[in-house]
Length: 559
Image (cartoon, rainbow, N blue to C red; front, side):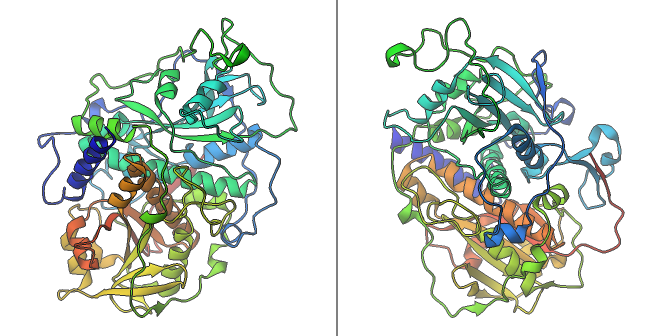
């Protein structure tokens, strides 16, 4: 069964990487924008718990990168949790920008407004849903809460201590996970919030969206002095039942244990009909399995399912067997390194809260001259690469993370550079080596010029590559990851890719340069240009870097 699930993942990802040449099914799909789902999931009738809206002063990106963040705190408090939720996934402003997107004219109307958030999301769909399982040690009544991203409130969906349900899902084999506690953040994904636009391509996008969110949480946890531990290898079935999910349409993808500070009195333990959701007397399970009672509001009259998404999700949701990712890291590359200027730490001297509040995708706003500099490119690469050790619980912990606290596993990704117009760097393609902070030449500029090559391989219309300074490519050895830890490895790899992308956005924003993540390149041609043909390494996500014009007609109304 495990091998069959791996083959399903390989078939799906193969279709994803070839989609520039062979379109994915369904071929006749048209987006019904009128019947699209709500951008903010809500549970009508559920009691609401207001959250603090004040945002504290946070360390700068420079302090986080150099390890100068504040000393560790005793644990989480409700204000700190509110800061984590709002800066990562809550609505921060209304944005109106002049760019090349086809729908820019509609954005002037309120019903088509763009509401900015701190974390990047493919197509701005934001399909991740956040739930808090609060235990008896927390400041809230024990139960299950949903974070309403549009209102910045918690919706209480269930009263009762269900920490045992979560602990059981985290430890399906009964081996025991030390220090799990009684409170958790659950990151779930509603496929329809993305698939209504991207249909079968949805699963590839949303698993990277999850990684971008976890990348934000990593930075915010370090900034708040309470680092977070994310768990990606667990049995999702009990958690999906707890939240009332149809597991083919939505599911829990990540669990983050929350340890509360001792500076507040714990809430009284509440039970529901005598059942607690945790072990009963003598370790026996309760007779009643608690579940969320409120249904979520669904705006769409017709919710469509896509067989490819259902199949790959069922495969990737298979409970992973213990394994090690040590052999799935990118291999060392030969070549004479091209030195990069040292990271410009002064350029990262902006508070994380300011960076997240002003982060945005560039779309068609790139303009040159002036050119992107080698120092700006190198600073972005160094900060982004620090997120490659994206801790996954598939095996034993790895070395300490660079630019943060705690420890992570082996880096599963590599950063590449298509240098297009970079002052101080010859046009061509390179692999980035974080250990030496240098570039290893991969290939010279194409015969027709780098701009022409990139434009030919980009099959969308919202960017002109002649204005882009550099294209970063994030690659990984998907087959090696699948062989190491099974089908769940696909989600683990994409989580790291999303975290790297989010850190690139943050570094670019701090330096006041533009950044845009795209999936619209012909992966086959890009791999050939990097010399990856015939290897098990392939490009997965691309990030465009460049400058924006000084004179703009953009609007950002801060909330």
